[in-house]
Length: 236
Image (cartoon, rainbow, N blue to C red; front, side, top):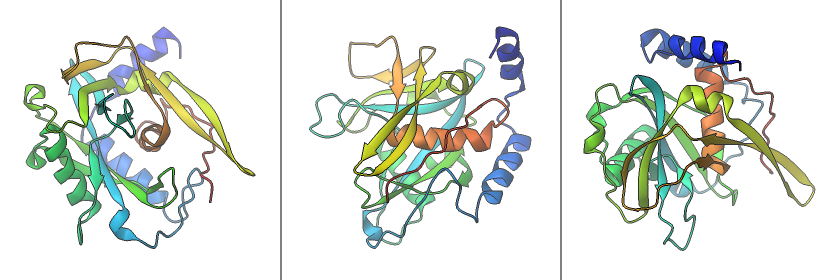
């Protein structure tokens, strides 16, 4: 994107009812059939499935998305960039689970979230469970109220949607005879909401499952801004 186009595009991003309805329409039109970028098989153990919240909000006048940075002290998935969320409880919907886990992890009040839509589920890396993204807007959230409520979260930060739309590339993976691609996003224009670490990086890199969820969000939310020709396929 040229600087002129980028500036013009930023001015057109507004998290309002017009964008909400267009977003919901695009999501609805993507099913069925299964979105071509993602193939999801039936998971026999629904109690293993999870949901995450993709929180959209305005930060310093810029439409942004909120992430968590997992602690570097964890034995598994340490240092990864994630969306708030976790495993579903019995008889819990993805929306209920995403809101409950977001409150438990970083203190997002479920009453402050306006749910826009549920996206298509995605397989986890072990192919044994699925994660359902739930996109919601936080129109009046007080950033100062958000703090890590668990040792698993090290930092809460936001990144501008416009920057993520232009700062992305792709990584190819191979497992046996299966090959697939996933996007990788970078942000240097992030805003740190809260951190338990004294070290502050110059850049965050969003990859793996979180990048796939962000990709799926952006192609429905900002298709004119997010120019992506990637055909993501997960091994089955």
